[in-house]
Image (tube, rainbow, N blue to C red; front, side, top):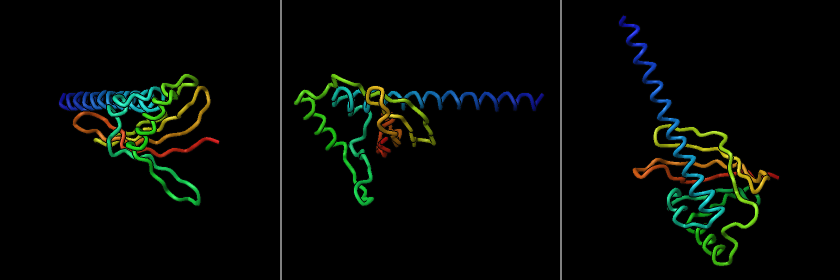
Length: 148
């Protein structure tokens, strides 16, 4: 009887943990969809961007001669505001969409791998790092692979 009770407690704990992970994954998807896809890419909505992208966020890349570069969210938002002012945002043509390939969570740290589409064309594979702060999940950096 004691083994049965321990087994029930163990399986209940595992089930609750799995539900918590699923809930956190959904929260991460929502942050990326709202702040990155809608706010930054499709609409140019600064409030949406700020809702899920940390002020210290950096986009990291590899340039000519394998030199690393970084682009701050401050600069990216300034470029986004300019696009809104020039009428390039919100997007009128092909919309950006993403497909979530994997989300890995350990404690308050997470990594999301997504396929980034412009219209129907796969343009990038993104790796987005997130931390969970008191107010929720926030994107803190991104690296990517540009599809040829």
